[in-house]
Image 1 (cartoon, rainbow, N blue to C red):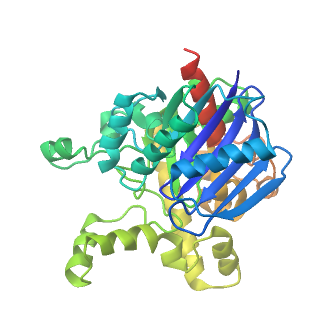
Image 2: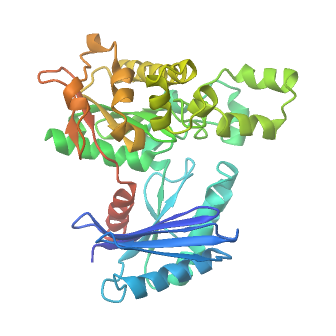
Length: 396
């Protein structure tokens, strides 16, 4: 009774994973792409790594779930022999309403829909997946796990923007933060690696992927995070700018003739390391910088400079620092980024051991013996975290 189907529904995609929470094992994973945009494609992978692929038209999310059920029936594992206890759904924006994973009811769905104004690209797609999943699995509970929920412990000073208070309240303008599921999982795994209760640790978690965010975790609670009302604020990312003087937007509208859609496209799709260095993939950017490409070198330095600034600021906010933890695609795999991002912080007690930093594998220490602040690499597993939270809710 510890098996959970984890669903991450996008506007044109459906990711799923069947998770055995007790063993922390993924029994199967799958992805259906280009929903409603033929030609579509789908793949299903079992625990042995065997993968089945199919090209087909997928008109809607109901059709995507129908394909998924057929894939389980034909390629395993059998959902009749190992039925899910519940279905856990990733939902991006929970606003200030959802502080924890929540069993989905009609009222919850109304709230998710109403919060779409804060996440118009994500919440409607998440809701479409929920509705289709309820039709596919009508006899089990469905649980929403919100990206923003972990950050609801931030104090008002951390989440409040200094604009007219009435305007902010009317339009719900505040910092919400994202990647909360990853930050929660990684902070607890880091504590387990260190053999200490998370309640007594002060951590900075750096989730560095195509999207990137920093989080100050005090006693297992988020007290500060770099993403804001949207996932655009904070660190430099693959295609997103991160922090920017708001007057830059006004300048671009006045002088470059960009409208709202043009500014949105620039900051979200044509900025970050892609806009600066010509490469949206960190592996390509590092290779270009190491080959002497000055544009790529500057992009890499800007990227790491921003991380270093946040580490210093969050260390000051925490008042003490036990560990800096890297996670996600770039954080787990890009040794040069880890070394550059923390360079010059030795006076904080933060150091990276060059030999350890080049290692691969699971959770590991990359700081030298005796360092005052531990530096760790901890792989994230958002699906497992969603599954765990789903079991916790259903078992209450």
